[in-house]
Image 1 (cartoon, rainbow, N blue to C red):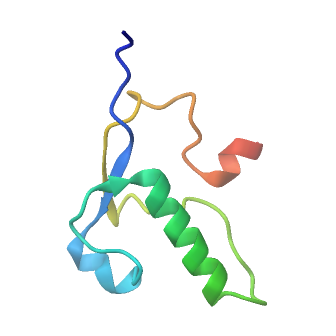
Image 2 (cartoon, rainbow, N blue to C red):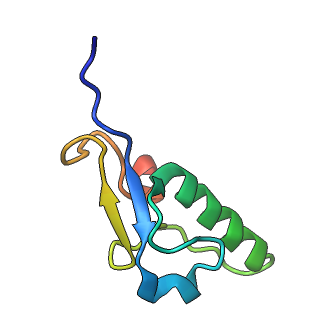
Length: 83
């Protein structure tokens, strides 16, 4: 039996809820699912515009828990995966 860490989760801080209409504040959810929701939302809003990649979930706006300690093997930004 492996001792896998808990999956990475995030929750939106209530004070930033107006900036993230597809999300419900103060609800823990898979960080991967939240990231996918935000990418889909940005793509829908920015058709024909410049889409800037980087950290999708701003650590000032979200709380995080779970996942591997320190996450050195996992990119923290989408651009890290290609650098």
